[in-house]
Length: 456
Ligand SMILES: *Cc1c(COP(=O)(O)O)cnc(C)c1O
Image (cartoon, rainbow, N blue to C red):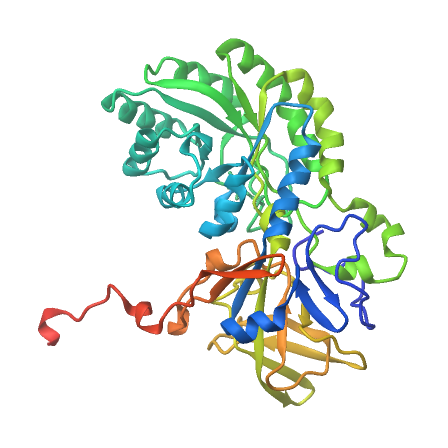
């Protein structure tokens, strides 16, 4: 389902619990009339730490990792969490402790992983534009493999490895030319975008790379897009490149095949709660679960006898976090009701950037009539909204709301636009909560800036 699209009309009645999913995968739900994160009422966190506030559930993060991990148990595999989806040190530490590796896309992410106690030897380094200094750092720290996206990059890695008297482990990213992913800004697996190399070219690339003396051809990688909510595109892409992978494995002794990330999550419980019998609908049957993913892919991958890497980001972090915000004002103009909140597009840009859908629920459940509302932030941009014309309970100044499924591509994309400080982040385990990023002091938003000498 496309990001932000609605499969069924919005529910008019209060939902018994969020994502009443037969395969429940997160720990944010109502108890009585209060929204809880694990064992804590979220409102208590909002009052203690202020808003806007990201709240992460350690159990949800762990559970997603474990389920994917155990569903693939029959083959040798490594889950390399895509750091770009949520790079908070405490989140990385949680996943490192489970034995996870990391999919990184910059030297900064490598340094973060190490700061969180993750091992460079479990990192794969992707991205089309790796700089000399990034390659050098990754080689010095000993990453598991580069994911090279072009021949000039392979030559550059070889040259730098030679200079450092090292051998660089590399994989090449193959583009399987399968269209997938919910939005044009997040599809990556077709020949029309900048990622990877065309399947037809790959064998030639490996032949030439095999002649570069400072490279070790360690694997092959693909990643077809993000927020893919069905298994079919994954199976199609793996099936398409499989013969190529086998030939390369035989010829160059490759050790691993990374099938990338991109597993989608449920953002829109309308999918799930449109009717009490929702789980019998075709859409519900289509919801991607680790079990379905594994059931389709394992028969393809088992015969390879290679180490399989997965690079999920959103699947692990997405439903593991929410963004809590507080209503500042209500404003009625003509036929519209605007709920003006204290979070904005600088805190969570997905609705503005990808037209993404985030479920919005009050921290105290309300019954009664719903009012078609726009939830908007204080930033001076018409794009600064979280939802439009959505039936929400009647709200008042000071009420707290949660933007659900904000754990992936949320805080990592936050900016200081409008000189707004970055929000605080809290990690919850059971009944304990810890600030894992303090709210940025306002003076820090201009740290590093200076007046020109002629201005003083
Ligand atoms: C972004 C990215 C991922 C993770 O994507 P998700 O949709 O968050 O799972 C994995 N691999 C690569 C190479 C990526 O660029």
